Image (cartoon, rainbow, N blue to C red; front, top):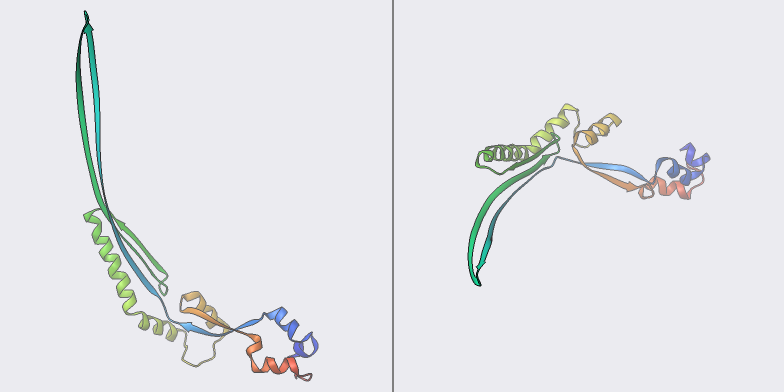
Length: 175
């Protein structure tokens, strides 16, 4: 308040503290999953030939030998990409063989289980910090929310939107 009255007014205040303030947090967690697959096949045909020509006493004889080479290859792969913000976990599993499908299924199961109980896990983390709906937050709690993955969005509002700030900018006697 003293800065507003004696220290340069609203302009000095916003110069020091910024134009926006944290109005609130949107809490929760996020879990995502993508599974993709691809397959390919390649067919290659090559033909090689050798021609032998022999000329003896004005008689010419030619013989040609050819060899055809055919090759074919095919394959498939599957990929799982997933994340969970509450546990700070990422999944990236790629398989190209039947034996690797187990790892892909296990990873998929983990992501799905994480997404099914995301509300319970979020509430449990908030209870650990003694946070309740409507309570004012301490600086430590704000740091916890932003560092733990619980705050999925910071809601910022301009300082000029505050009723008190509007009054401070128009009145001479703020304090």
